[in-house]
Figure 1 (cartoon, rainbow, N blue to C red):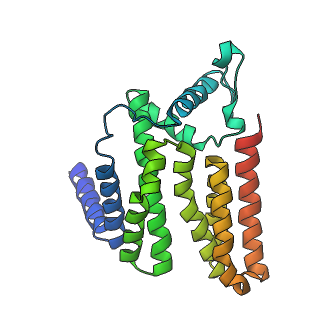
Figure 2: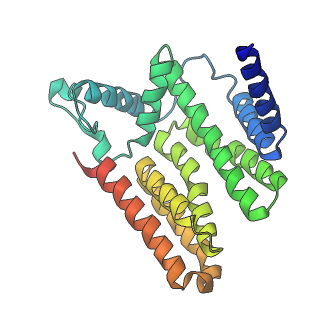
Length: 255
């Protein structure tokens, strides 16, 4: 009787959630991402320019954790056990995602494929949330999210080049712009998404960070009057200072 009541409440909650437009749109984005990469699911990892480097980097992070490193930086098995630390110059976040994927997947091939698909889907959801806020429309957000996932350069980065860090940067770029938009429009929580977007970019790919931050500066120029006040400056400093320092120095630089 109790289990039936719990089931009914859960079914009611699920039906209510699915009927909300933004939940439906997120499910459509997930479905589009799954269809977009349907040929990759359950297959070997596609050939990519950077595939060998990233595969070794992922395995190196796994070995570093097994070696007892609290912050996995040095692969103790590379170069005849002399060690190598790719995470000192390449953002490690994509490796962490691949490692978590490996815990739930039967092998590295499937785990790497899953991490690529997950990253692209998350980028679509991030763009949906950003453009839904800017356009004040679920439809605008949905179109933007799907277009962002399916644009040729994005797909080339994810598959042909297998640039894992650059692919992950596509997730955090909309979050950075969402934070900036919120700060411009006096949202008191704007600093949080701004800091997560900035920190995530730094942990993903250095060159992409420079590129997207440059575009963010250009994006902010028309709103310079809204930004030249203490409240906006404080949020930028809070997001770009506290979150930047936490992401940058605790998770990327400390050996």
